[in-house]
Length: 417
Image (cartoon, rainbow, N blue to C red; front, side, top):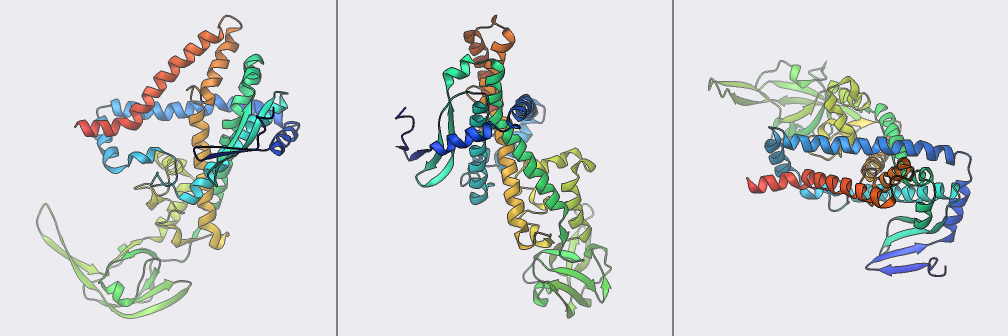
């Protein structure tokens, strides 16, 4: 017992800080009236969340086996770094370091704590609990439920303990997503007009002082929310009404340039007025918010906005709180809007992924252990621990091979071709 509660241990840079206070907190929470029904609810989430992961993985696996598999694999290998498959800030180019680590630590802490709380609510022994550090950086937590007791109790009790970790991740993830959707729904463009995404240098726009983040609101006093609908001529001199950093000003006597387009089929040239900006129409800005809040009203592919990081190629231009678009919006959160929304997204993203993939029937993850206990339970004495273990091992090997194929397959195909 003294060794179990040795306060500090240090191995290969990993520091384990054990605390009796953590055990007492789990005891207290385990006695709450809501804990036992919540444990049953989280148990029912186990096959649902594991099923979602299986659907995503097998769906991607079948894409690579389809006639377009080689084309898809080539695109993935050419455009997505292999480290993008690792949910590790600093290695994954799409995961921010600060928000990513906060989300990971939060997910691991509540995951482990939930195992312990449900175990104590069922009268099971928790041997030790504490916090994990890499040197001085917190990276998670740990809770050790008595393994011998887990095998001796009724399968339904063991399954509730196993389902608790990913269950709380699933619940917290969905709550953060709900808060994020509500927050995004409150976003509105900073001003009317066409939002300026970039300005070419040199150009008439840069010479006039127009900058990214501005809104062009009117030309010659005529309000306009989409520059593409204007009828202007090359070298025309116009007055441009611009919203910049909370104030409106009129840029006098801006002389447009000329740009020449060549039709690749007819090889004929056409000229057009040139201002030198790329812009986003006002309707598109409001549309991004609407699509994020109500993806079911758009094409089914829009659900990808929730399961792909905002910095992912091709996604940032559709997500209101992405670094590409957030400067054009405001919300009741004011200056904290972007920080709060990105943190909510990453807590959702990490918790949701931890919930679904940890519940895959792969041993020794929670889903694999739950599969083994489930087989013993439904066998009612006819399926031994050994047989259940072998069945779980077979399923584990099959799913690991599929996972390796999905993750490494595109890069291997691209290398071989």
